[in-house]
Length: 443
Image: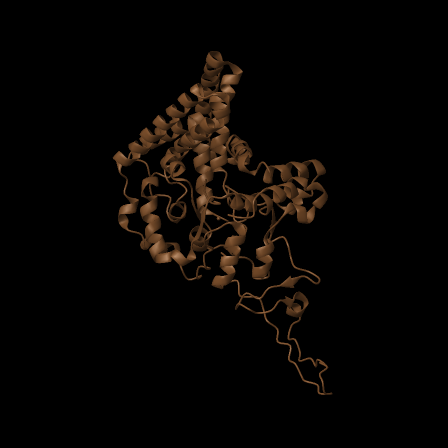
């Protein structure tokens, strides 16, 4: 749950192009509406593509033999910096607001200095209250699973998977040194909080720090990156796997990320390997002891029922949702303030989800400073809204937003940010066309 994890669309594509999706350019005799003022007629797309349209003489028959001279005036689509255009993009993608581009002279220090000092303060009572909420809600979830009839199990799994996501957020605070002033205690709590998720704490921490240092940077961001066309064209088998992974199975792609990034010692620096090995040993010990105990008491079906299904629910929430209007930048183009303030998404969820997940969905202040504890994120966000509100990307979770993520955010394109699979390989992209046909277009 983040934003995508995640600045405006490329200047080479018009606002109306975005309305149709970044992968659908208007061509031929298609028409484009003029949104700059109401009542303007539809203009042929071709007339907008002609640079410096010259005056043309138009013969118009009338009762006499008079001719009048008409002037063809080119009317350009509205600027992508305009409020109307951003509103159209927001409605098209399922967002509440698309932020204005952040001026290049704004720095991260400017944004951080605007925050009240109290949002950085660690409160032990609030920190341990979050632990109590997660432990009790997870225990309640397991009780619900044990008592629920089969037809109510999905609801029990949804609750328990959301509750165990709270464990991840607690470990997440520990990794950012925002849980306790005692750093050894943080490492212990973080390691224990990650164990039910079989996440190795230290490997995740090292990679996650790089995500914060290089958010939305090509080749640098370790949390999410689009598919490269070279990968897509490697082989028919890999292409199919990618289409399904980034399409219908997109909500669980974090499982592949978990496997690829956290268990390979070669991905870590020599000074990190010792701590990585300790975390891996803890995870493997939990699997070697915890899983057999679950199976011994409840059988394989019990392992699926009590552990696997909530674990899949957790991955649904932590899979980062990208946004198609937010570009990835090369290192020489990358700007920290734009990436963290203007390139991250705030997303509202139902209140019970936000409580169980300790407000991690209030994600923009977390990217401004990871040192802000989760229980202070709302106060920090309120301050950011007051000072920088027009630059923020905001949404409420909805299926239209999910449709955008699953059917648009695919292959990297410098001009359009993303190109959808069905644009490049329509014959192989039946899963994407199916999602487009069955998922709602309304937020």
